[in-house]
Length: 119
Length: 355
Image 1: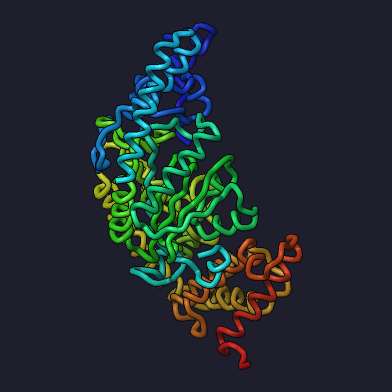
Image 2: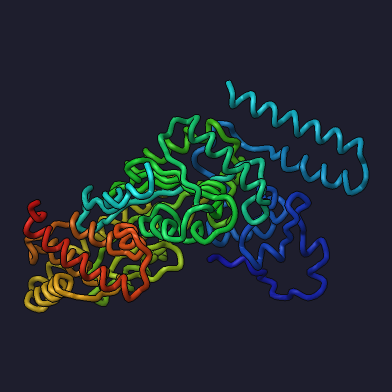
């Protein structure tokens, strides 16, 4: 398996700081976990760990951009994943008004999907 | 279709036909895909994995892909191993946790693993050297599924996968080769090192992390980003004919320079398979590998490649137990395997016994 270990080698206590160990607010995965396990937690980790991954792609894939087929529905915006994370955060911070809005948005998205599949 | 019906045929990849099938066992392409609305498998809850299964099963049925779905979570250990031996699921899916499964078409040329490392692992296998046909089939299947699914895709990075080594096209293009003559020379390592330099990897029969066995090798691409699917297929297609040529030359050299030794080796292998009373699956595979080469070189004339392939798959542990309808310990399997080989090789030579 490819190695995602840091090249800097020094993983002292400061590496637990947010700057050195970024964490995805959507899936909860942090860079250390990714480097240990080699797997990402959700599609948004590609943004969160962008710097590490760019270095990896340059070294191992000799490329940074996709060339090839696209899915019919085009690129994803990952709204469902983002709203679900915001909903969890709103509940934790007891912002129930925002939580209700997000819940409605997610439900609406679910209905749209179902309608599209039924037609 | 039920799993119990499968052992009657050897499966698409072992049919023994297709271009260059004396050396190329099969061509395989897989695509890694994930749904945009869910975390990757390592962070997905049980209910999310269930919902992923539901959405993918719906898309399979709506896309009219003619695939039958099997629930791997609820499947017996024997059936899971059986599907691994047929290369229809990976060891990772077999040993995974939670809701997961596989959808197969009737001729076993296409399979879709659900909730393996990625939400979807679409695979097509064709007998012989047939990468372009495999690509056409998998591209069509992928297009049909994507009409009904929101796939995780970024404009810059392409298809987003759980492991960044698959990002971009998500494609793994591979051919399984039988290289018994090159295996007897000292040149194989040199070839493989050259392949690694052009970003191709060499693995054993069951893919990642497995050792080459019985002179069977899988060669596949490592790069997935920055080149289109046809370009990646071409990079493999361009080198395989050279390897085929080297193997053919090595076979002819062996025939010319060491004919007696080779004939002896092949005949002994055939002899042991016809007469043994207990035999492991590893020894069976090594001996069948010799017999396969013997047929291709005209040293054995009363057996066909398709028949060797049938023996090759049906003597694997789970196949042997499924065919005989019982779970057996290793020692018992070795006795049964030897008895099965003696019986089938007699039938293949003399025709089936009259009623």
